[in-house]
Amino acid sequence: MGKKKTDRETAYIAAEHQANLMRLAAAWAAELRGDMEITESDLIGNLAALLEDYRIGDYSAEAKKQYLKMNAEILKIRAKSFAEAANYMARQCEHLAQNEAKWAAAIAKKNGATGLKKTIRVNTIVKYATVEDGQTISESIDAAAQEDAKRISEICREGVRKSKSLDAIVKEIRGTKELDYSDGVLEATRSEAETIARTGCMGIADEAKMQFYLENADVIRGIEHVATLSGNTCLVCGSLDGHIWKNPGELGQVPNLPIHPNCRCVHLPVTDMHEINSSKRPAEAENYWKEAERAYNEDHPGKKFDDLARSTKLKYYYKAQKDYTARTGKPAFDEVPQNMSFSEWLKTKDSRYIESYLGKTRYLLYTKGELPLNRFINPATNTQFTINELKQLDIEAFKRAGLV
Ligand SMILES: [Zn+2]
Ligand SMILES: [Zn+2]
Image (tube, rainbow, N blue to C red; front, side, top):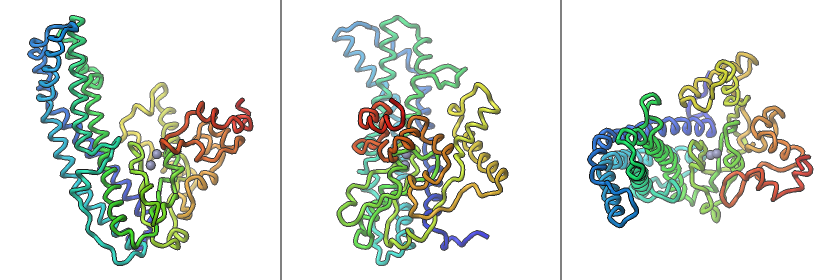
């Protein structure tokens, strides 16, 4: 018997919500990829004419002038794609921000907050939230349009300088049919559009929730960072897991989500410490992504799991969970206390699991070198230190681990 929805614990509701957001982000990514494609045949059809006007392949002022003109023409031809993308994102983000603010209200209420104010300025969030590299969504889309035109223009310039045929230039821009046009420079724009969609989706979702929490700062005690207890969670997110920024004073330090593309972290309002101490959260029992990869490699020697489409990877991932349950008779996810952090949870796993998560060198530094997980992270940049950087920082740990 499943529990009623209202009885379910916050961590489970949050995990499900993040999974739904990831699905939504994937749908947006597909939409924006499609937007990029709508002007591709126009561009290819106009290339001959563009190159007709741009014939001086030297370094003269006249060549520069013609180059800039060509670049402007390309921007014009591609404008429809980026305008569609911008419209789509603006519309969707507005709905999403409203939805996320409501969700944040429901979670805060569930955690015992009373007297919540519900107004957040959705328009402001969509317009001004900086979701990727300090840029708003429309700034990211503008930048992508400039980069796209630049990449195409540069191929044309190279082509003219080296007297390449029109066919050869088209091939570099569009790619080849055999590879489903994934080898052309246009693919860079399509995948950039996907990143903008995914990051925008997760970023706006986080920003709307944060704005709601800030609006209601008088009734919350802090913001908790919740990562996923899984071997697929990176060290940066894992190290932040369970961290609470206290109110007042620390809410300004909460990092923007997503930490990186495909980050599944969520910020939850802390209203009552008792709730955190007494409830449960899900944790994967086995490293299902690693298991999925292993099973795939067994069936397909010589092929790479990483090259698969995400939907295919997910099939193997879910199959690994089923196989685990069939093999052990246990559920695929353990229930652990809500106040158990990622690093505490990792300690409960066996050495094989931990080594598969950290990799050999970090595993030795973690066990024999006695380096805690958060030492693997550069707090200034919120990224993993490389092994070499770690060595410079902590030669003693390397000695203890027998690595020098
Ligand atoms: Zn991460
Ligand atoms: Zn994350």
